[in-house]
Length: 86
Length: 371
Image (cartoon, rainbow over all chains, first blue to last red; front, side, top):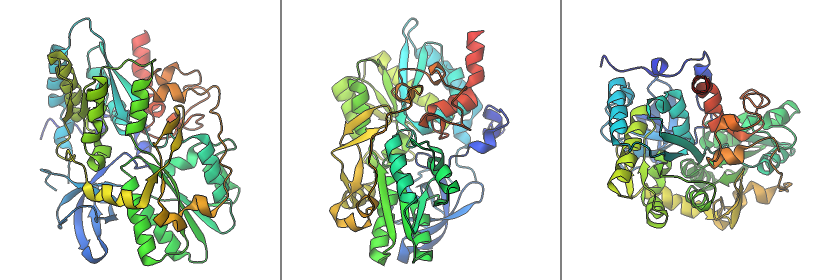
C-alpha cells in the first residue's frame, strides 16, 4: 500500500525512538507467526514481524497450527489474531 | 511480515479524525480516559491527540503495570534479591523503579544477582540451569501477564523444579476502575477500554461501567486507527444517548475472553483482601497471591520481607496522574527533577507510563499550545 505510513515516519522523532521499545511487555502484546510446534510440551517457536524468534507457551489456545498468527504477552499466546495474514 | 499496516494508514486516520469532528457537539467538552498504558504510549507516539478536536480531551488511566507498583513492594523485592543464594529475575522496566533506598539496578551494583527476563518461562529456565541457587521471579502486571505466570508455575510444579519461587504482584483491572469512578474529583464521559486485558477477561466484566455509572466503554486496539475509531464510537454513543460496552478490537478480543486462561488463573491464584496501588492507596480485592495449592512456590512465604508501607515522595504526583486528575506536565518535578533517566515516580519509568509518554513525545506539542 502506497499510503501506509511506517511507524518510524508516523512516530514523532526526537532521536530517541529506538530506545523506547517496551521491556515490560506486560501490556504490550506482540503478534507473532507460529513457525514450529512442540505440542507435547505446549510450546511453539514463533517469529515476530522483524523476524525475531522466541519460544511461546500455547496451552491457552486450542488447535494452534503452523502459520497461525497469535497475540503473545510475556511469552504466552493469549489469542489467535483473526483475519490477519502472516 | 506485517500485521498492522492498515491500522497505521494515514489517510484512514484523517478520514476518522474528520468524522470525529463532525460527530462532536460544539461547546461540549469530552473527557475520555484510556485505561491502558499501551494506549497512552500509542497516542503520544503517533500523535493521535493532535488529530482530535480541541474539545475532545484524552486523560490517562491506571493501566501501566509498572507505574502502579508501590515503593514498599520494590523494597520487598530488593530485600529478597539480597538473600544469600538468590537469583532475582524481573522484567527490565522494574529494575529502574525506585524503592525507598534505590532501585533493583542499584541492588545489582551492590552485588545482588538480578537478571532481566522477557517472560516467566525464561526465569524457570534459569532455575533449571542453576539447581544449587534459588530463583525468584518478580511477577507484575494485569490479567495479560498473570496467565503467563500461572502457566509457568504450573509447569514448575509439574516438572518438580524445587528452586523456583514467585513474588506475586499481579493486579486486576476492574477494582481500580471502580475506585476511579467512585472518586469525586474526576468527571469522565467515557472509557477507551483495555485491549489486551480484555483478550483474557473478555468485555463482559466492563459492563458495570455503563450499567452502574452510565459511561460508554469501547474496547480498543493499540494502533492509531484503532484509537481514533474507538474515540469516534464513544462520541457517537454519547450523541445517540446510548451507553454500552462496544468492542472495536474484535480481531483479537472475544467478548467472553479466554476461558482457558481464566481457568488456570483461578487454579494458581487467589484474591488478596486488599492491595496497595501507587497513588491510589489500598483497593479491595485488586491483587492476586498464590493459592494454597501453590503455597510452596510463594516467595513471600519462603522469605521474611520488610512488608512496610512507604509513602510516595512528596514532590511526586503520580497518584493524580494515574487518576487522570492532572496532566503529567502539571506535576512540579516533571521534566526537571524527574526524567526517564532519573525517575522519581513510576509513571516516568516505563515506556507505557503517562509521564514518560509525554516526556518522550508530547513536550513539544505542549509548548506549541502555550505559545
